[in-house]
Length: 589
Image 1 (cartoon, rainbow, N blue to C red):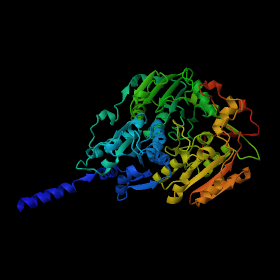
Image 2 (cartoon, rainbow, N blue to C red):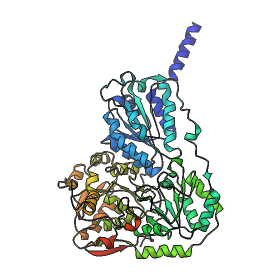
Image 3 (tube, rainbow, N blue to C red):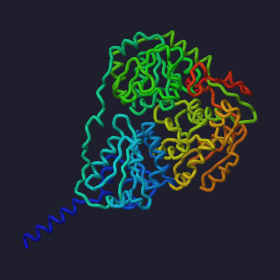
Image 4 (cartoon, helix red, strand yellow):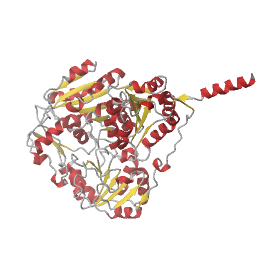
């Protein structure tokens, strides 16, 4: 009797220490601070969803798996935390591939959890089976197909750790249905990886040579990318730039890393950068890249870009060093730590002649566009939105002309208020990303700036914001075209508008109204101010459709592969209308 009672007690205790694979994964997620996720259920992920029903994690049901991934990205970009998205197997997983790739290109911490058919059925072409593990190898930092419940805790912890470690990026766990219910006593997520995969690298490089080059430079520039945002190095960047007295220009992904109103700010450089930044790059004698990778939208022509300058580079990812452009000096390390070291070890400098030259370039080469009394110009609309929101809103965009206008005409003073798709350039990104940003920072206003082409990529997420009452303010520009494609076709393809004419668009106002979302359409410049007020003052989601000219273009423009001196600017374009000169890099008036 005694032995029987003892055995029953041990058996009971053993059962109490056992959990299903789904329970273990959720426990690890919760212990790592995951309290929200986005997803879409299906057969191969149902056991996990059943356990999620009982958990503390809030789940947001999107209307498409691509929306789930982009929403998780938007959350991650706005907060710096890991965004989690979930799908079933097969088409559910493949629908998230675009969002995962987007996260890889923009170094976004993301964890994708995909259902998979049972382990015995893998490789048999079972219903909704696909090789998610194989497909995701090139687009993730880490991925795993779990084969036993004993591995769930470890794999989940490794995926979460690597998503934010060193250079952030996406990870993926392919979770077979039978493993989701299989029992295990392995409940702790202990890492088995080499520490070099997740610990910050120790700073290394030729610091003495770099400090000497900084001191010697007469016309230096800081070239700042998204790495300054990812590493939360904005305070260190400001301190370093001011002590060294060096002007700053950013990439598209670096917007907000340096205050746009600062006298040293040049805004954005590159294909559609500010004209004064483009001209400053041609004159500089020392170019210092900070968390930027000389990508082909900034360094369009590798033989010409900053050809008069000594080039230095800091990046946490050694693979980026000399990948497109060979630099003279490089440092590997966390950007915030490197900037702290440099600020401490350089002497206070004054570069009056160069800063005065930068000021003159700004005065002589402002952003410009033409206005008239008939059409609303998108540049004016975004500039007015910036003034009315005092530059404090979170702005999410899709991809195309509106994205570039937003980057040019909405000044960003702080990081993580600019949510956009950079490296992959994903149309449809902006709307679900805005949802993620709004849920990550619920006390702040979130605006989506989009176009009629991009919006229709993920327009179904209107159902998500209506269902959960998420207050997204949608500024939708309608020009009846795929605007950026049309611009290229006009400039480089002799006006052959092959398949860029959106000659049948829906009534966006009626569609929004179908979801009980307030919506208006405006067409005249006299309606712009009241229209923006309607959007800004709305306590719920709202949509403002702004009809704009189909011929409106983004200027300046440096054609792909061209030299900066080949910039097509406002003057060379000879557009009709009344010129408007906007000096963006100045305090709000």
